[in-house]
Amino acid sequence: MQLTLFIVYFLLFSSFIYFYKLNRNTGFSSYFIIALFGFKVLAGCINLYLYNNVFKFSDVSFFHWQSIGELKKFHLNPSAFLYEWLFNWGDYKGRLNFFNHENSPYWSNLGSLFHSKFMLLSNIFSLGNIYVNVIFYNIAFFIGQLLLYKSFYQFQPHKKWLLIAVIFFTPSVLFWCSGIHKDGWILMALGFICYYTIQFNKNRNLKDLLIIILSIILVFIIRYFYVLCLLPAYLIWICTFNSNKGKVVLFGITYTIIILLFFTIQYLFPSINPMQMVANRQHEFMNLDAFSDLAAPLLEPTLLSYFKNLPYALYHVLFIPTFHFSDSLRFQLASLDSILIVAILFISIIFIKKQHLSNSYYLFLLFFTVSVYLFIGYTIPNSGALVRYKSEFTALLLPSLISLSEIPFLKRFYAADN
Image 1: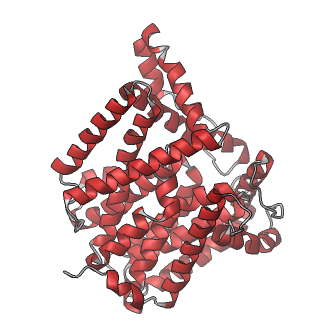
Image 2: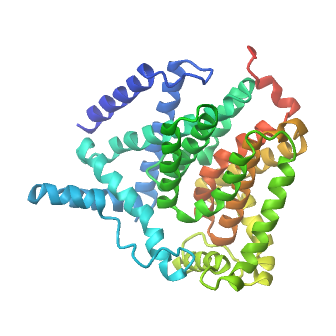
């Protein structure tokens, strides 16, 4: 039964891709885009299989069986069940200050609540078959990722093969953003934000603006602290659409001010303490006592503590996990992925072209992803979680660097018809 449902839904969504011409403005045929979707679904199934067989307890199984249990209550009171599913998002009263560490659990749990609600919806249509759910998650994730690709493609169509490679086939992105995890939602929402912001700048269509707002809200719901990293760079981007010069300087000045505010704003407004918020996030991860924890000093809400932790944050987010022959295969593959990402990062920086810096879209993603990378480096002293949490931002960072640079030995992969 599960295999039959899997094939039916895959064919249904493949038909949707074909008849709605999702390949439009991609430089690829419908069949290639369907194959890309199929590859992503396959990666999601592998992720699910490994998660269910490698980890004794996983959040994927927890959300699945929790939703199966809730579905059994549906027949008792369908209207109350639907009302609860649509409108119950917890008690937000008195919790609007998300800089306050006492409110952190509520905002952190919103992402899990959204994830469980979508799992419940998926189980209704999949009849509780978890591998079929992979298709439901991935059609949403895939469309967002495809829109991200389209936003880059319209600026440099000749780099389509390189863009497809880094957006869809970077190993950590493919594995984590295809599984039934919250990372896929973040990447999907960011893809919608990027694409429809560009469209809104061209057409001033209110539908595009609504999609942008809903996508930002989705990022906030899934992991609210990422919105705090997103908004500064995003606002500079939309303010420099029609500007031709000084964009790098503007980004630099703005982020200098943001860094100063990060370390001083609590003295002006005691209820707002971003240093404490970040430190609390690190403390929460340390208290989990997970398998692949890393050694790192305890982060305190002081300038000196952040300065001392900076080398650890950079090393962790860029080079962890390191390669060891004694490690299991999954850690070796993850370390090779990190090596690949760092290699692309440094080579791209060497070959950055000045004329590409005039495109504030690339600068927006570059400043945004670097700020998130730093946040992750400071707050997640765990090897396995590091790879997963930065995966959706790697899908933004690498195409930005590929677009900003002109790497001589990669020009063979430029599209011949451009």
